[in-house]
Image (spheres, rainbow, N blue to C red):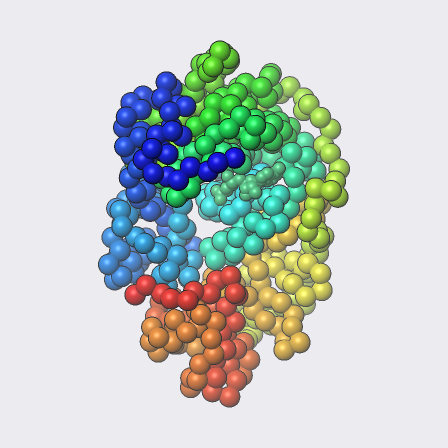
Length: 479
Ligand code: SAM
């Protein structure tokens, strides 16, 4: 299949397919050729909003608030949003503005059990978790190659209630009717991302209809997993009705209805009533189509479904080993009294009572996790991660995770190394060793630069070795 170069003609050819269904197709074409603003949201677990804005302003990055989404911001010029100290410290998450509508439609409530069926790289999972601090969030992803991005993002943000699993969402072996809400942010052909792509595959029936089959199965499984009266949100970043309205129309039957939702401050078009001779059921008009020129964003489709009390279609499937490519470890609860957590409290002089509302879990013999006590791992399916990475048992002793130190290090009173300048911080974030005199005991230390918690280092004989995981290392920092 030929990939178009995203020259104006290429974009026009891709969008021509949708000219008849979009209000003002000329404006759509014009905005699709313009750069996309960079957007992010502030992480309240790490800092106050004012501190984030001030830290970025110091680097000449000015952000304007996104009026419809509290805590979210946009910038019209920000070449390297992943290259700052606040980013490394987990103060914000970079996410396309219009993608934030999916969780706004899902409207998570504290204490709920919520599933994100197609979760990597995890931006929406993280938004759900922040809105549901006393519940359980299960983030599932099928592709092994995408699991690291999911766990790295959740750890960088310091989230303690998310459990990640790896399974095919079309047959996720968790009990039917066991979730209050399910998000299906489905894989799709993705024209909504045209503004940030240099190359793009024009919509093609063979590929598009194959995607639609996967999407239908994902949505169908989601409708069985949610409780009667519960909410399922179906979202994609494609304009193709075959992957949006047609999927809803094919799958819902009497198991769900599309219910209205409105995000004040955002312009949308209703879901289509028909396309290429096919007519869709009437409630699909309550879905929202966000075309890029409506709000100067990417493109997105969101439908909020309410589950009826009609029984599930299928019995909950068992684990299919063909759908699992990574080993699934049953997590084991670990008594706090014997847990590595107390060793870390002692090493860094953190008051153990801070962890009264957490449990310690282990996967295998060497990896430990910190999970909110209100969050429960599934028993039917092994897990990839269980809350925040806490520590790993190594032959050099118990190694605290960077994620744990970034989140809880500020509460520690000892074995903290303060880096003297930006050069030292840059070296640390590159994963390098440096000569440094510090008043700490030999062994694992928490490393800080100014107000930024950078994570785990190892100190011995006047040398600080960075223990920053490879995936978090940064060759340069914007300063
Ligand atoms: N919700 C994510 C976020 O906000 O960061 C983006 C999700 S992306 C649109 C769709 C994801 O679904 C991809 O990571 C893809 O690997 C995953 N996926 C594809 N097929 C799947 C399946 N059958 N079961 C579960 N996940 C699947």
